[in-house]
Image 1 (cartoon, rainbow, N blue to C red):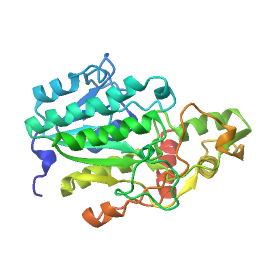
Image 2 (image 1 turned 135 degrees about the vertical axis):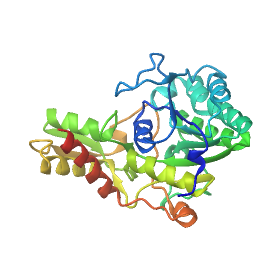
Image 3 (image 1 turned 60 degrees about the vertical axis):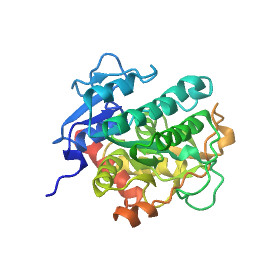
Length: 307
């Protein structure tokens, strides 16, 4: 097998303790990986060690890149507290935008390739067809604006890079909608879930595996990475409960009442339409994710096996 960019030297994994970072560590198990996390105690959830880096400190990440001289930097870290970002815009911008621009400049200086992960929140959410990479962004929240600024800062840095926009990410671990539904569903017999926001739930392990394959295939630039199909948060919740009951993860499914977003107000506005068109990645690299329901089955199977 011919060598790829992942074989040229160390891989610096930023955000190794997060939801996507955990899956990237699994996918990179046989590689020379330097895990990096923002927590100063430097211990990963599974007990492994990691380098600590305060992404809110100017120049901190760039200093590590210059020291370690990686061949690839995977940036799976971000300020993701969407609602809190409305009251902490400077911190969100520091982590989601400024640090990404500094990372790009540092990576360019050492010849490293950057893989960066962005979000559907760069769009306004008022579309009626899946968003393509060339559609005009229009973020409606601080989180969305700062993530868009991060995309732009990386592109302006001149680094060799690929950015993947993601939506509705979840896994069998960490904090996410699926795990929240399973916890609340075990406690309550009735739930109210928003039914007028549409997207495609994306397993973190699919993102990790596919983005690394795309990197090795040589894709660079901006790409959408999302499953096939679409659903609402309400229908997603019902699918979670049906799958959980069939696998013995829950004794019974709660009643899930469909509500409008206006009935569940939040500090930050959410895109009503978060469906991403991943056709460009399929055309350029022959990579296409399966249907979102297949991904849900896989993650529920992981949970059932572990229980």
